[in-house]
Image (cartoon, rainbow, N blue to C red; front, side):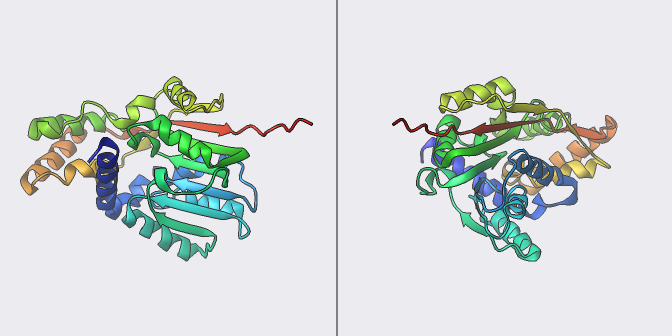
Length: 278
């Protein structure tokens, strides 16, 4: 299995497992950031939108509402359990203009210029070669259309993130990660350079600082269980899992942590239109 296939399998496994907590009320930021991404696109009724790494619909559902019944949204994700959540929510809202696909964003097979907008929220960094992935998404944007990529800024989920990984290092050093995949583009300059490597140039890159409240340490554990951390937790035996959980909650109580950092970077690029010379 090559690096790309391994990364895809790891992400699908982690987020299929995380689906049972993914829409937990304490993790409302997933949908908040998805909605804000869509708002930055100024979608029009009737437009066609591709949403990759769509999760449980945080950006696909508001996009479907914006483009209306004459528009179309395709929502694709490798995690079939998250797609099932998104489909159920779309049905509950009576949205009939969404097509759901359990599929890889690099192999969707759409022709060039198929969509008015392509969206990727918190997903581009799971691909080892992000520039290649961005180039593939850009290919499917029509002239005059937009590509939106949203990623995490620095210090994601701190201080709880460091507490979690300190405990993993103590219990299972083989599972400890020296960096998170989003660290490669956690500053506007890094995201801008990655897009430029893909042939995409934009100055519409906005870093937005933020925090997410924790009403109790247990809120953090629900967030961990409904996110990419689940991929690590699934590899622990029951006793180790319990120690990591209790150690995390104990440290957060001792340090009286009442919020975690949720800094975000939004990038929107508009594809230039062709000029036909006579």
